[in-house]
Length: 383
Ligand SMILES: *Cc1c(COP(=O)(O)O)cnc(C)c1O
Image 1 (cartoon, rainbow, N blue to C red):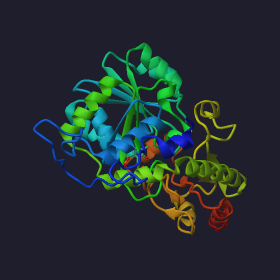
Image 2: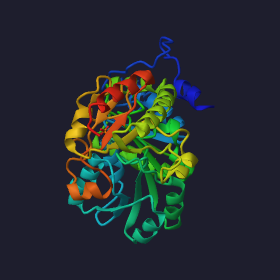
Image 3: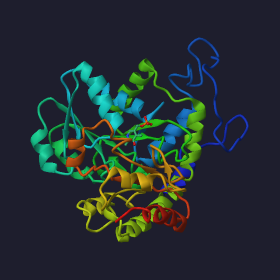
């Protein structure tokens, strides 16, 4: 079955009691049992809920995996994955990891002596050198945020597998429509479903997909024991969002491509970070592992100052100044003061994250209007 058909049909059955075509919101905490030990597969809603089960079946199909476990947020999903490990174990990850993931790994799991090592994951050799006897997991994010570097999932997975180390991909920036890491050799995929998967900026949600039975059993045990479950209403909203995932992502990607070209030609813009450009340093990897090049891009200004960036950020009408990404509406952000404010300036500058860097999450509006919106704001910047 192709992606669009799976998005709409996988895991979805008419409701057995009424025939309702939409999966009902099973807003219940417990289930009446026929006799002690006799039930319909549901006992208590921390463990299982039918709305959640439908969503999990659907998401497993979209990522070509056997199992999916849904969580109250993307970070709750990561938290559960990190609980698979024990003190002294090492996780190797990218040096431009999502800020919240960095905080969870260092400030919470660091307290329990889980070791985080941060490297440039676009360099497969750096990974070979970094793996030690303690390394238990490689954590990939691709494309990275906000520099839009691309990590070769297949190459990293091969190295990891040869050393008996598992690979987890945070697939939030791509969505399963653009890239399915399990097909490229990864063991675990996680998402902040808050972003593209739900796509309507009205839910916080996360999920983990894997074909590894042992990992899935352990994650279900951890979820039932620790309790980071999503509510049925949120599961319903995510399921509804998924029905248009392929349409939304496709439109975002087309819009982003046109906006990237417009920005590259604008005299106020010094550099555009977009993996769809043939001269992007990781373009070949992106072309190999992604269906399209994504709806995220960043750009820098010749004026190179916070003041010039501020002018752009505060003068767009359609691009709203906000954190987050992957919704139907376009967002504009300033990594240096918003998502990456906690990173020291010297560290930021090393990867090109300057005070004038601007990040866009391109939505599904009409691209002519989006370009006009950016043109008006950019024309205010002194060149
Ligand atoms: C937003 C995000 C997260 C965290 O997800 P929440 O749903 O906000 O908890 C993790 N990774 C990436 C790449 C994200 O963009």
